[in-house]
Length: 223
Image (tube, rainbow, N blue to C red; front, side, top):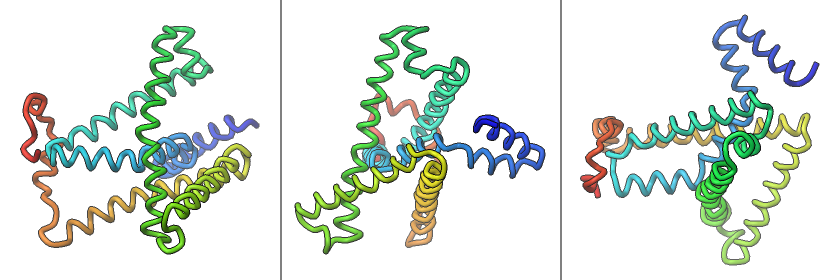
């Protein structure tokens, strides 16, 4: 039995056991989704969210779920094309739609990855130098050592993924664990900020999820 058939059978068996078992099975099989989550939960999203908060305050909160919805739609479309045609999305778009659209999508994806991924390297180096091991990795020499360390860890992780079998499973376990830690850390920060001092302005935060299109032609009140 192939891996695809095993995964399909696991889903069918889980559906017979109930909703919770089905959810856990989908979570176990959703490797690419966790990878996408790990890519977006990093320095790029942190910098973008902080900058948006600086210029718009709570009034731009509605942009975050909108971007999430657009991302889900885009990934769903890519998944549908890949599963329906059996081709890579880039090849399918070039062959069946238009090469201009295909290459435009590829270039836009490359630029987006630079925006979201590149800040994670500087963030990782800064975390090692300033937070984790400031005594060991101080100065310019320490920066190069930190970069080499990050490169080595990344190479090992990629080797696990490419090796397949137990390496792929280990990669997915590490990836899911890191994403879970990041998400739990976000919740922890919210709880900590809510319990300190005057707490968070939940009324203003919730009001920020209501789109205010008038901000298109006037500055936000917090700017």
